[in-house]
Length: 581
Ligand SMILES: Nc1nc2c(ncn2[C@@H]2O[C@H](COP(=O)(O)OP(=O)(O)OP(=O)(O)O)[C@@H](O)[C@H]2O)c(=O)[nH]1
Image 1 (cartoon, protein in one colour):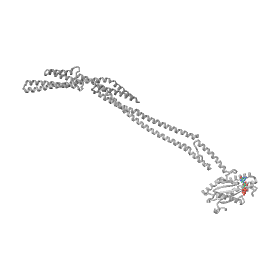
Image 2 (cartoon, protein in one colour):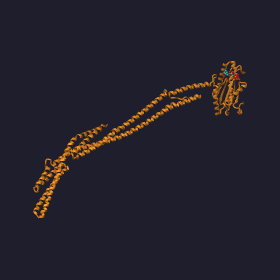
Image 3 (tube, helix red, strand yellow):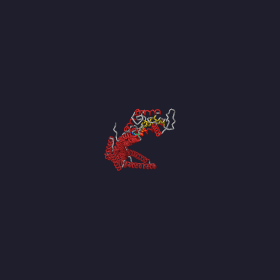
Image 4 (spheres, helix red, strand yellow):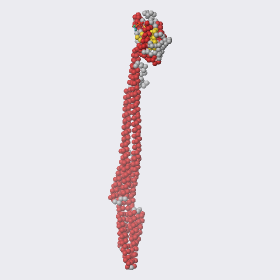
């Protein structure tokens, strides 16, 4: 059997258990909320900062593309220098942003991709000096060509004006010759007009061919234009000798030839411009491509980080839900423990056993000594129950002592009175016969006087022992009523059986033959009074005892050593066969 444990110890353990549980739940709740807070902080501090940075990198890369595009078409050297500085600052800013983005915690793949971006941006920064040089040369060539073209435009305007004026003069003079009818002069003027017109036409075609170099044609076409120009120039040369103003025409052709075949002729410059433009353009394209690639890269970075934030917020939601579930489960376990404390330890372990113990104590106080004492599963209450057991045993002993006659060992009058009340109650309820036989020894004073009190005591004991042997079934109450007077209470016997019992008792004492010199018979005898309470009759205890007493008195008066029968209550109507009162 398991040894009993102290309730105090159990409650102390439970208290510590609940306290531990409370502290445990508290620690879990605090650490979970702290972890949630850290996740939120990390999201705000890292992820959101990364998203913002990736977004600003995208914008920066787009601005770089715009700057490169502007640089490609710049026509002013100051503006070119400003744009180059701006380009350098933008690449540097993009590089700084890339390095900062790399400082955040990433996967190996992301870190290596950001490293490649940084290397590429550093390369772009290192090529800026060459870009400066090439763009400067391209711009210089462009300006040179532009100057030549400007001169050419001015020349073209002067040429056209001069020869149109010439043609106008010739027209006027031809009209005068025609008016005067000077046919030879008219013919000469018409011939001059034709030559001038031809010269003007070829000159205009030549200027137009030269000016086509502004169209940024490839070198092959520039060569072709150069050949066409030279052809037109050669076609114009023979006409010079036929023109009136040969000096001016030679001058125009010399100027034009200088543009076409000199050291810095228009075609050479155009070809140079194209080459430098192409070289610078390659570098610009490289920067533009890299800027576009950076924009795409950081756009992807932005998308990934945005997705990370969305995943992190989903994780947060899941964690928050898990936190809630944990708190609810902990709350249920906590309530369960509190319920267990109340029910198992307080209600079942303390209150119920205390109530059962109190009921048992009440039973003992009310002399119900057959009450079953409660069982307790803790040390303190078990000790209480054990003490109560001892008390119950003492109470039983006291009760026995208080109900037993010390001399004869049979019940005393106190006990008899209790039993008489119970028997009357049963009689009323179940309508059974109730009989009371009162008897005492005849001439007992003389017996004491003759044989002494000790012999008198022994005589009483012998008489009691003899009568006990006669009792029909043990359900009777046999008591010493007082002095040498006894009483026997029997239930369920009619008047005949009652009389028979009384007669048997009387005879048994005669048979016992206790010597008594002072009686007529020479032996101790009994006188008996029988009181019968029929089934349908009602009476009090006093009436029943008084009737028994009267019957005994009558037996004494009749001469002793006899039985007298009486029915309780004077209003009783005897039935045929009933004994005479
Ligand atoms: N030895 C002894 N005598 C007792 C005891 N109790 C009562 N007596 C005696 O019993 C006697 C009763 O005397 P009485 O009442 O005159 O009765 P009696 O002498 O028997 O007379 P009758 O009943 O009329 O025959 C008294 O002398 C008591 O002292 C007892 O416990 N022991």
